[in-house]
Length: 198
Image (cartoon, rainbow, N blue to C red; front, side):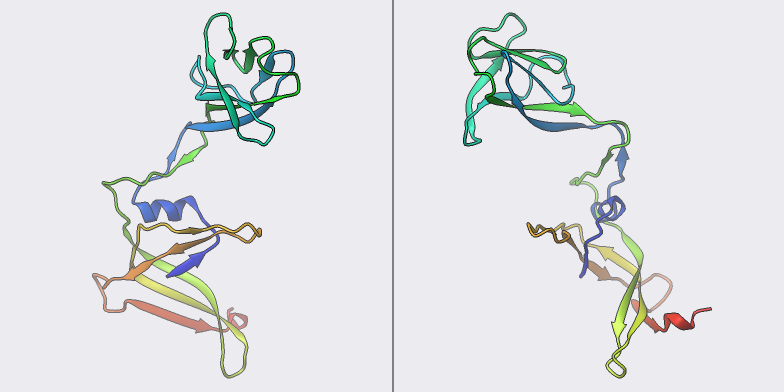
């Protein structure tokens, strides 16, 4: 098993067996907004037109209060209306300086990358070359090494470790060594002195 704190889209795509889709995607946004004169402005422009996913009064402890419902006409108590990013609330429903929280959908730009895990695609097998360091028991020096797996089947099980200390997130990458079609070596490890490379 390999552990990597450098997580790339390409590795995730290899593990899932799905290609990376680069295109505009819809994502969910959460905004905490301060109300001023029965109005508040979202950070981004929602898609589609009309109602947001949900809008709530925000309690002082940060929890959701009463939900506000959308109307396309004049607002009455407990409602909001929307024009682009601007939300209009019923007069007196939410005091000036109080907060509401809005959940809505936003479209990304066309450079967003989407990686899917699907039931009809599986991780492939690849030649894997790993650069690493090994320490000599004899002279206690570190030497460069390269581990080569000629036909490695990647596991499609994803496991992320999260840390609140600021340490990098580590992703486990499980590899199964398979017999290559045109050889007998499953894996080679080459240890060398990098200073002697020409």
